[in-house]
Image (cartoon, rainbow, N blue to C red; front, top):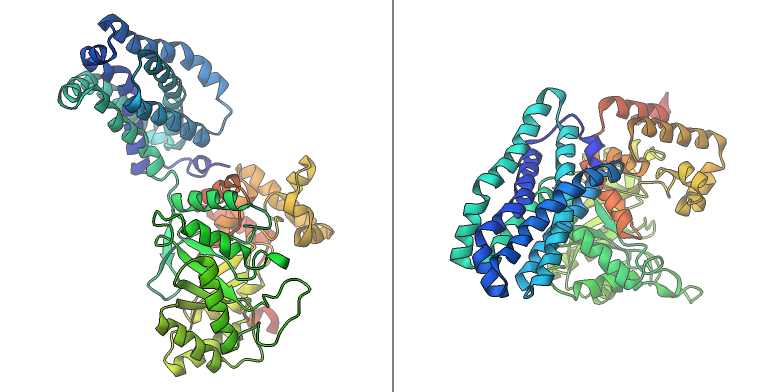
Length: 520
């Protein structure tokens, strides 16, 4: 299911403007070059007739190929199709800036024409798809006005820019215009405050647990670049990630990504964790090298900072409950680290509701900020956190950060993938154990059947559902590839109707409020 299907029947003004601007840019590319033919011919040392072929070729390709392209691409996802076509259109126009030969320029015109041939009908199809029936005609007319505007002002604009700035200057404005669709709602990230803090974070959290064990360093860097480029500013890791003999490797991969510069660290809200023993698998567990003693917290922070290649951690999280260390000691250690500027906020993970209450009551007595977030296992198939953990988090102003939002792949179309022979994560671990239970298997089948009727992707709906839950800051997604990241990003744009939410509650009912859920 694409974002376009989720938005069917409503066409926001921003989208309509972007679609119209996109149509204008695509059509302008056909006409605007006419106004700069003399300058172009002089620089390329060709006759004006030959230069005019650059216009003719573009127009002929659009006229001849458009009907065929419309049929061939009819079944392709419109979002991806339009994104690919606009990208090719942009690249072809930007390349003109460095082209010095007539032949190369002709090739670029052919590529731009092919891209426009695919993009323009798709723009019209998207407009018709998104517009409500009563506004479909006026919406299409608005987009068509973009084509008319290109015809009316294309040649004068080309003549003016050619005279004032040189014929190559006509291309960047078109490129910027065609990129507008990708900038207005196309991959729009949403943000929220982290609990009761002033810290603004993205509604999706990039989990890095697969970086190292599943995805190599280069692939991990690519995913982080793509996530940040899409507006994801909240990254989560842990000192133990990498696991076994490679504990700490994931933090190192994040650190080498930061080291590339480009504002990567400044744009990132970085969360990491402390608790586990960092001795290699099978190595001797030395006293005070794990859990939450003041000594281990201090030692672990310094080690994480070194691996991450940074001088501060935005969110330092307690990976598990330490039943042997009093909260006064924990907060004493955290307060010192805050004063030193090594961490900004503290959060918890896998804590019960009463742990959250005790932690923050102790912090309040000390005048400390206390916990600002809780990472917990929470998804459609596992809703026990709703009984006490989430109410406690809401009561004390903690942002809830669900981990395993697809329940180990169970909610990501596990049965469909099983039939297609691509079960992946859903074929092992928590998901496989669940599917062995006939009752759970029946629920998952009902879930997938329901979403098939709505034309929705299971994994995207599972993430979008969490974004509707009270108190949830954003789920942690752990992509192993950029395709998986792209699917997760689409979830932010989904709006789940009330009837679908009600149907999901029927399949996966929550436990109900506490204490009613267990008291009677």
